[in-house]
Image (cartoon, rainbow, N blue to C red; front, side, top):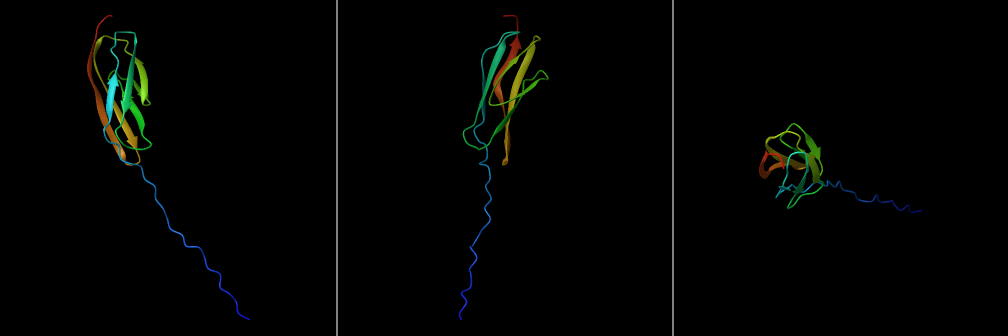
Length: 102
């Protein structure tokens, strides 16, 4: 009797990686002391990005869209960092806040 050999299915390992982040931009709304400032981060390319904001006054936030209330007069520059498995990129919002009373 002939025995037919069973063949094993072929397999291969697949590694899925994030697309590097490029084109990070930060934007914000005008602000006055004690009112909410709206911040938005966008990327031109990249996958699975997470966002961390440094509002320049010791407070931080996370997310592509955040709000923050400045509680003291002063000059502030907000910076966002976008991170994924391929690395991280930072950008300032392009505005130096010199907060006065509104």
